[in-house]
Amino acid sequence: MSNSIFNKNNDYLSNENYFEQYLQHGCYPFYKEVEKDFLVRLRETVTVVIDSDIPAVEKVEFETLDKIKKLLMIVAAQVPFVPNIKALCEQIAATRNMGLKMLYLLDNAKLLNLITEKNKSYDNLVKPEKILLDNSNLMYALSSNPEIGTVRETFFVNQMAFIGQQDPSLALRNDVLISFVFLWPFHLQMQVNFIFAERRRKRLQAKFLLES
Image 1 (cartoon, rainbow, N blue to C red):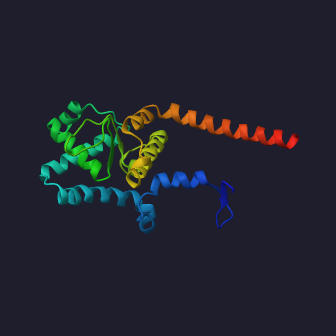
Image 2 (cartoon, rainbow, N blue to C red):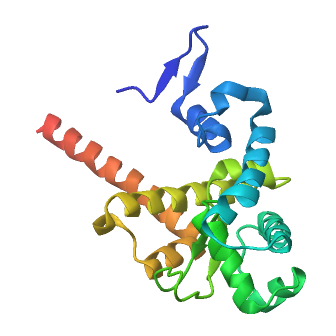
Image 3 (cartoon, rainbow, N blue to C red):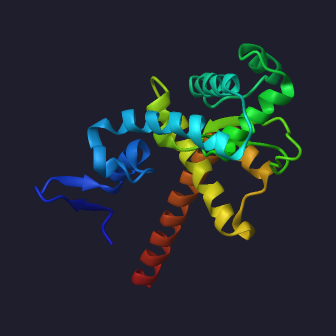
């Protein structure tokens, strides 16, 4: 099967083109309704989630909602974010426990992805080892200049989280995910090298069989 296609104008497109488009606007179906205004609509959706959806499931004060918005923007500007919880809470004038609770609320609202050493539990708020936005579209909406390596890292973690929700037996253990995320460039290069080595081995085997 070919790894590329032609569009209706007979312009050459590769699967990578579609992947890059997905990273920017493929996570939310309303893109088809708004297209060029997608990022504006997504920012508006984020505001609705914080102002309406979170209070619908959790009793929070109006002042807390403002702090949650500020917290999200602080993280969005620095992803991948390795948090100093004390300093982060000082920035939003919150106690440590309240700061952690707000992070977990954003995680539950699918705006952040908290990577924790132990399984996430809303009964036991453990400090996240690393924080990413929930998906790559949010990076383009909330970050001023998304770095492509972080965008793809965000995509990977998002997909692994989804797979784990669909089938817990396929989920990466948190400690393995932490290792992968912190060593992302190394693991990615190792995977690429393995793929090319495997393909080369199969080509050599095929060549040997043909010649013999």
